[in-house]
Length: 215
Image 1 (cartoon, one colour):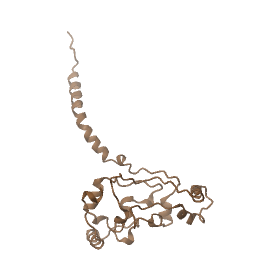
Image 2 (cartoon, rainbow, N blue to C red; image 1 turned 30 degrees about the vertical axis):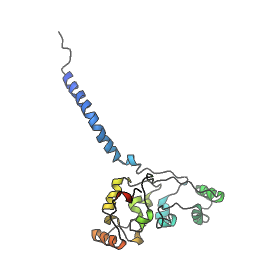
Image 3 (cartoon, one colour; image 1 turned 120 degrees about the horizontal axis):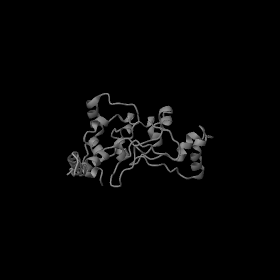
Image 4 (spheres, rainbow, N blue to C red; image 1 turned 90 degrees about the horizontal axis):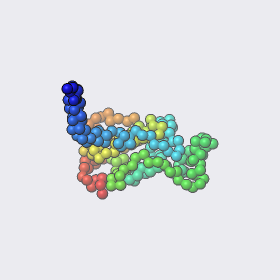
């Protein structure tokens, strides 16, 4: 009488049994790996805007300072977006007949603000104050990356709770002189001693209590 199962049946049975055991156990691991990936936090995804605004041209080529357009970053929770009047301050003389800035002209003459698309969005239960960070020596590039190298701006850090806490627990490496807040290429040449000096000078504290960000 011929055998009911082939010689490889035992091997296949063991493989299927191992898969049934390992698959449920691997799901949490896969979820953790996904949550640590850029895709889970929409990192490095260039955001389309209603106007083709190239940060490389404005920041790197023209040398426009971050605070010229985001003027409330030093005194407000929000960094703010430039009003159309600010854009027209230059573009009523430069490229004033270009089709690329037609949306700016329509916004200006129609008295309708430009609907910029948000790049960085925090949950409603998270409180973040731009002024508190800028005035304590945290540079724009720390959170926003090298915008002078971005045609379209994208989110660089994951903005997870762990990412924020890492800086709050050890802020010194991310501190810089206030006059260098917007400098894209500045680096902390003095190392740890310079970071500690800046922390003392600006009164930086290691704020890790829940109420710091959740109010």
